[in-house]
Length: 154
Image (cartoon, rainbow, N blue to C red):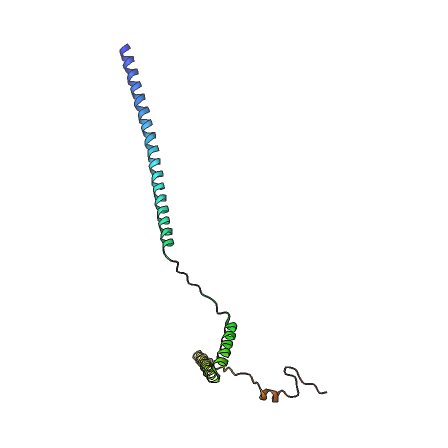
C-alpha cells in the first residue's frame, strides 16, 4: 500500500508539474503572440514614417512650382509712367517721333474699344457707351446755370 500511495503521489506530482508547465507554456505563447502583434504594428508605423521621410526628401530636392495669381492693380501708375515716358521720348526724339507714338497709342485704344464693343455685342447687350459731352458744346448747353442744380431766377 505504501507503494501504491507513493506511486499516486508521484503521479500527482508529475501531473501537477505537467499542468504547471502547460499553463506556463500557454501563458508564454499568449505573451509571444502579443509581442508579435506589437512588432507588426511598429513595423507598419516605421514603414509609414520612412515613406513620409522619402516624400519630404523628394519634395526638398524638386524645385517648387509656385503659381501666384496677382490681381490687376497699379494700372493708373502704369498709365502715368507710360505717358511720362512718351512725353520725354517725344520731346527728345522730335515731333515726328512723338506723333508716331501718339498714333500707335490711338490705334491700341481703338483696337481695345473695338474689342469691348464686339464683346458687348456678343453678350447681346445693345447698350452703347457714349462719351460725355465736353468742350464748347457742353459750355453752350450749360451757359447761365450751374450744372447739377436747378437755376433760380434772380
